Length: 174
Image 1 (tube, rainbow, N blue to C red):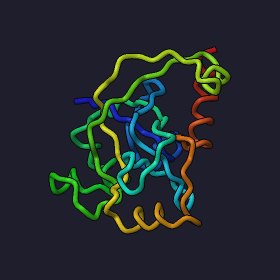
Image 2 (image 1 turned 30 degrees about the horizontal axis):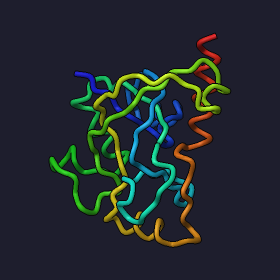
Image 3 (image 1 turned 120 degrees about the vertical axis):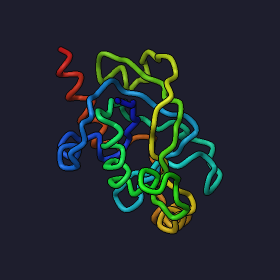
């Protein structure tokens, strides 16, 4: 069985996917609404909007849609990578770093990097996908978001990994 997964963090890098031994196949770029991206100590976390503190901006998280092959087995590997216990105990634990959830993702299509940067992309129909959102009850996440010095609300994407994948895919399609 195969499932569609939305990924927005360091797993956008193919080398990280290979190290984690995840059979992910790129489909297209996408975003999810009503989530905010935070950079906490160099790692990117997407949290549901207003889950920890009120925010009115950056309510889109950009990433990519992947097909996870043999998902009955590899969803547990992905859970372990994202520090989520749903694949092992059947539910999201209150102290997990990430929770595996089903969300609506909107696929986006563009031909050049400039089109994406100018937000001139075509949107597809919403899809139900699996994604991992940071757990607002986790102490590391909660304190990282609430501390003003460490809090880094970003523009909704993991810039380095997303842009590298974007450039690679745009060059690949030429």
